[in-house]
Image: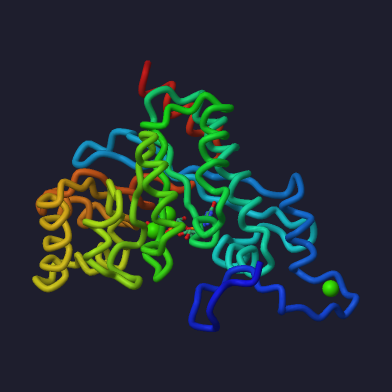
Length: 272
Ligand code: C2E
Ligand code: CA
Ligand code: CA
Ligand code: CA
């Protein structure tokens, strides 16, 4: 399962890596964690602007390591990609999120997908099976893919098309940071742009910061795309986004990532 190409390619599973020194490494621990029990999902609310009403949640995975405590995904997702367990991890996340979502009628659920998952032949088949098995409404499922050199390639593209035809929505994550190619926006079945928090952070009152965010919002309107502004930390940023035409946001200003039970409480409160 060696990736085609070389070091310039995405760092997916590479069976030439290796070396076993006999010590249980973080890699070994991660294999154990994925095999059962140590992963946990938090859900961060996605809200409407300007009112802050709950529209959906993004599932964010955590690793509760028995000795090291909670480990952040920025640390173990790249590791999972390298040692070839991201496929299994990603499907666990999807199954768990779709299962929890059955308690949240009408709520949109966003799940992150690694480029390495998109490169597996089985990906769309596995996703459809989980959607059916859990009773997930495909129209409420949003798969977040990052801009990478990979997503425009044949296999990832075919998966995105199949899933999109199924009614599942696709969001381009961290928009504006990666191998941004505006071509993706018209060639791939993308529904939503998630505006990277770097742009949101630049909404500090300077004209330049606002200009970039405004350009992205305008572009998405022209292309008929939905947008979610990420990493909104202040009321001033939320206000500025609203003025620029933003309609959805996510960030600590509104809510932190939280366990499923707390989302259930928010849903109940919103219904009541
Ligand atoms: P991301 O997809 O861009 O997720 C948003 C990250 O920003 C989350 O970090 C979230 O906690 C954080 N965040 C949210 N609001 C704010 C804010 O107002 N200010 C700041 N400074 N940060 C905010 P987290 O949970 O540590 O996740 C980090 C990254 O790990 C994610 O970035 C995503 O790329 C990856 N990740 C998380 N869960 C999964 C997963 O299930 N699968 C895959 N493939 N990747 C995942
Ligand atoms: Ca070892
Ligand atoms: Ca994301
Ligand atoms: Ca993001």
